[in-house]
Length: 178
Length: 182
Image (cartoon, rainbow over the protein chains, first blue to last red):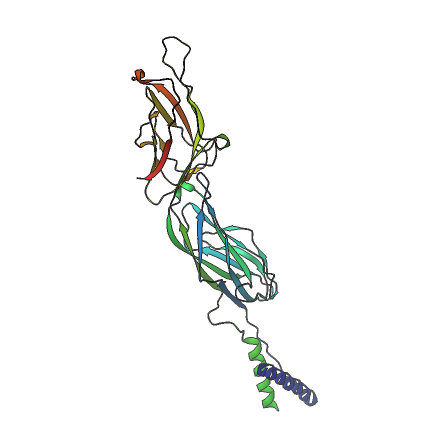
């Protein structure tokens, strides 16, 4: 409520200034500077680290990875005139014999603006790949349940190279504009 | 009044030019995935309609010839294996021997599935009550499931040099395959 009051008062003062200036024949220039903004935040439901594993239903069957959809990418962008933004993704390391795959779901639940186009399923690699393109000025909301839902899973890619054990992979999302 | 105007313009400019973004939010963010691959060693014997009992009936119609049984290749060994650094071996043994006959089994190379299927022992293994290797150097692999997938097993009953011990009878034996780390 105090914030609303301050804003209201400011607008009233501005209007009255306009009237005053009109009476004296002077003009004032309002410099409104809106910078380009690109802000990403990943929210994960329940834990800051996402666990992934593979399982097999029985002897002779290939390994299958259960999908994990517990993370969300929240975004706020303000793009320059005529510009579009892209969010790319990369991983810190590859997993022998397995593909780490990603699906980005469109952002529909909240926010406003030009939220771009999500790519089809990606096999993550060490170099940046676009996953959301043609982004304009927009915001998605932040927190679990807001933004672009991220789904990860593992898929076999060279069975003979797979080894038992645990490893950690860092997944990095980066916004750029063009 | 001009002073008020300047303050008001300043406030408006400040409000428009200062985004409400957390100091830790930037144009990049990352998170960690923990990936856990469990060691696995699963084997299964597959037969048509789930039947894994086979019958070998040595006989002959030629006087003077030793009774023989037609080879039986109706069973398949399905495997899924995930190793760390080691390899694995599949051994085979029987619960009982058949007097006067050798029960032999040979695994054919696996051509389905994917991975490191290892090496099948080149000649038929004569079954005893002790484990003997039949497939060695298995790495991470899966063979596919059911019949026509995995290692095809061929059984034979061959008269041995103790034919005097043969009696006309019905016997049975349980054949056991075990996968172990090397």
